[in-house]
Image 1 (cartoon, rainbow, N blue to C red):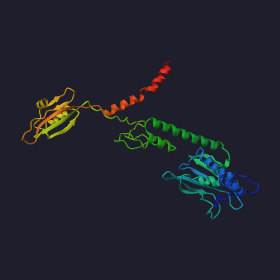
Image 2: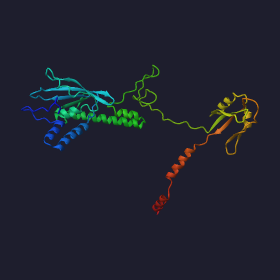
Image 3: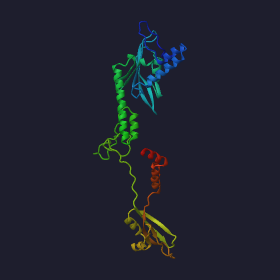
Image 4: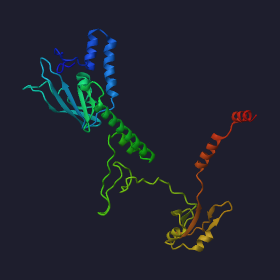
Length: 344
């Protein structure tokens, strides 16, 4: 127990109160009971982590009650849980009822600036029996009652319902293909608020999709981005091929899916005509195309411009993957023996 909040001695006539986990450990230590000391500390951690309201949330209220002793008056202090950033929480003293003129050292001892479990010290040092925790206006832990009374049971039911709602919403987001929203919902104890971005025009409603959504905004809260589909390759492309005064000066000036677009490009060269394309572009028996180059000249510039049809060949890697899948599912010698035994 810390020096600021020692375990208080009982006043004559006062009923015996439970010991805090730390006081139980110190009592076992005085008895030289190492197992009892470790068990008290471990059980205190288990009780805290298994509480239906754990972990703490921003805006939770924590009230700590202290009984009257010969040296200190009865009083209480109330803390509020805050968001300290980076996944940490704070616990700030809001008020106390200590009647001493100088209560320094008695109140505010359990305040914390940034920690992952701000209630840890109060739970172990003060004891869960001295704590009252309020969430959203309901008591979720009623320590002074020393039992799970109706109020605390209602708080536990509320916490369980919150968890069930979060799991249901997260499942719905995962089924819709929105894992980032599922994670955000599990990290929040409330439903995700709407995005709220204003519509493109004054007459358009604000975005009703959940905050942190991907893609476009929409006034439909259930709007989903259409799945991405890669464009299919065309069966044939058309290349604009030019040949210079030297036959080794060959260039591909453009590649188009539509033949008319290729013709428009080729028409920009003075040497292009449909007649030249028909004369120099020859289909091959195997389905390919060959360009017969003209005789070299002593002139300069483009001497020939033609449009060449190029069939798009299938991806050989796709064929390899298909073959590998077939091999993986084909029956081998061992499988054939098992199949024959089953048939017999």
